[in-house]
Length: 316
Image 1 (cartoon, one colour):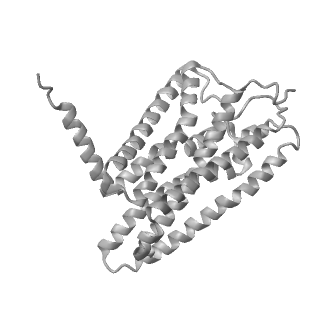
Image 2 (tube, rainbow, N blue to C red; image 1 turned 135 degrees about the horizontal axis):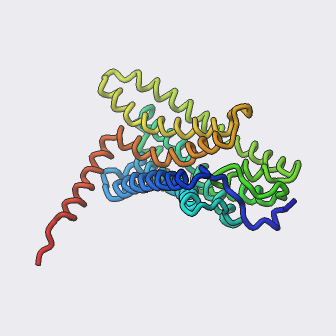
Image 3 (cartoon, helix red, strand yellow; image 1 turned 180 degrees about the vertical axis):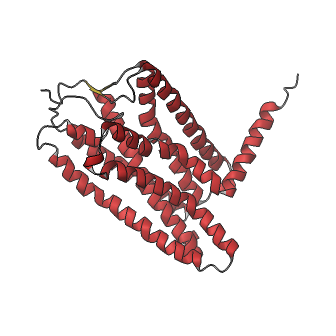
């Protein structure tokens, strides 16, 4: 038996036992990580440099890309290193930091997605009040609230989780540190405090989910009342990327945490956690760039600008 004061490291769950599969996973993770860095980096650079994109919608998208970069950088590099070096351990402090930043980025991203649904609601349902309700100061305050709330939420749960006595060893059935896996190591009944805090902390997320649902109900009603087909298509094109990102984010996370115990297994849990923690940050840039003409045009312009300067001969 051990307790939290004697634990110096945790053992993470490996994706594979065979060396060939471990190396295959490393190259797969490296490709996904580089794609996420490239996609989100291009969106951040394009929005920051193109003054035509300095609008509330793209300001929120820039922050979403920053959160996606932070989220995937919290879990995937450690998984890549473990697969490359055939290692599964993570230090106690490293586990604390990983859990804190993962909860921070994930919760802040969900709050930001709620703000983005409000942006689309005002743009389509109340276009005459868009400039008043979503001025630059209001946008900065809402984004700061999302980041700040995520920070406080992560700080509260990280401190509470690691204050529990751990008496069930140090092996985690996950490839990164997350709250449910830490709770499995806690002493009998000691985890009830954190479960109560998680239940209480779920109310803001439930309120955000209800707000997103009702926002899109009103949005679709307003879009269907637009007389011209071109107007409806333009309105849908600005909403569908955000709706696709929200659906991908929520569907994978909800199924990972609320699936029936009868179908639960370490391998299935590993795949599901990979889907909700790694896939959305890598796919989000593709979703937004495919449906957004302004963003695609700006990306082409900046890529053409950099390629022309790179290929320009150097004068002697």
